[in-house]
Image (tube, rainbow, N blue to C red; front, side, top):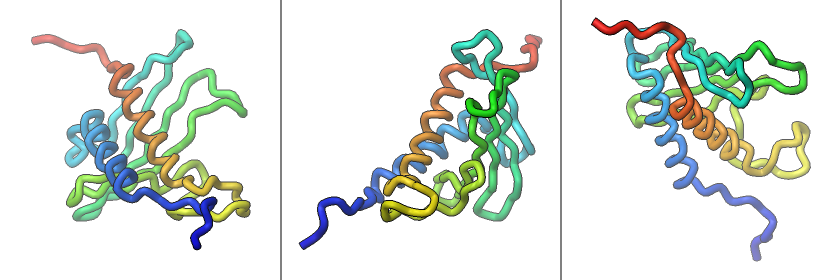
Length: 150
C-alpha cells in the first residue's frame, strides 16, 4: 500500500512548464545566440518599476547558462526580487531553474521536514515561478532605450 501523503512529481506537467519557459525566454531574448545580455524595464504597481537583466553566463554547444536579475530602487532587505540562474537546453527547447538565490540543483521530490525547509514539490514551484515572471515581463515589459524610427 502506498502512502497517500508522499508527493509524486507530475513529470509531464513539469516538462511542459520548462518547454513553455523556453518559448517565453526566447520571446524576451530572441537574439540569445548572438548577444551577451538583454535588459528592459517592467511596470510594477509602484511608479518606479523594475529593471530586468538577462545575461548569458556560459555557452556550450547545446546548453546555455543564463542569469535573470530583477532589481528596483525600492529593494528592501525583506522585500526584493530573487536572483535566478537557468539552464537553457537548445536541443530539446527547454529551460529550467538551476539556481534560486543561494540554492542550486533542486531535487524533484523532498521529504518533509528537511534541512532547508523545502516543500515536497519545490523544483516544480520554482519553475512555475519562472514562468509567471517571464509572462509578467512579456505583458508589462518596456524598452529602456528610446525607439528610433527611420
